[in-house]
Length: 101
Image (tube, rainbow, N blue to C red; front, side, top):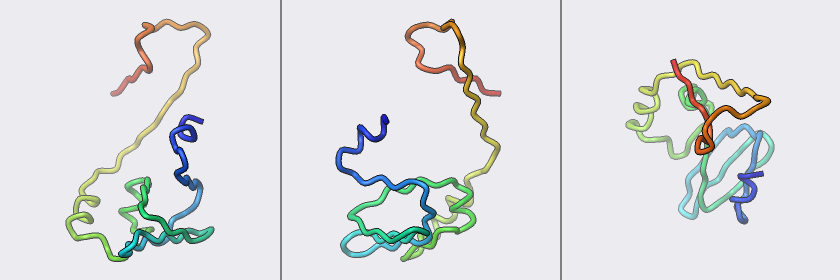
């Protein structure tokens, strides 16, 4: 709901596997498992593992320095745990609590 309120006329497509992204003189063409799209601009959010596995084809191909940067990003385990408490015990000015090892 939060994201929907921020979109303000911007198209958001979820749960579609992107197969190919092609930059053109006028924008970008996106091919997914469901359909094809064209747009002026594209914001793509995918896991590093998808980029490393080259599961998305780029035309033109990404520059070598981009691939080198992608390959240099380490992949590790990332887990989130959400807990619900009956009573609030943290200060009012705290939005979330982050504990890392």
